[in-house]
Amino acid sequence: MATFTLIAHWMACIWYAIGNAERPKLKSKVGWLDILVNDTHQLIQSTKIQVNLQ
Image (cartoon, rainbow, N blue to C red; front, side, top):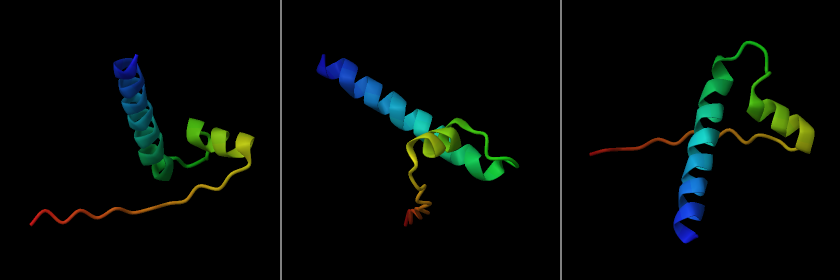
């Protein structure tokens, strides 16, 4: 059961990352992430993560 939960969580994280990555490219905000935000009346916090691989 723990393995299923872990894999389901990873899949949800990947699904969220894909939706979050496609948002800036959309001309009209009709993606699934925007619909979720409108339905739940929440704000999207845009964060930029910079990785320094030195």
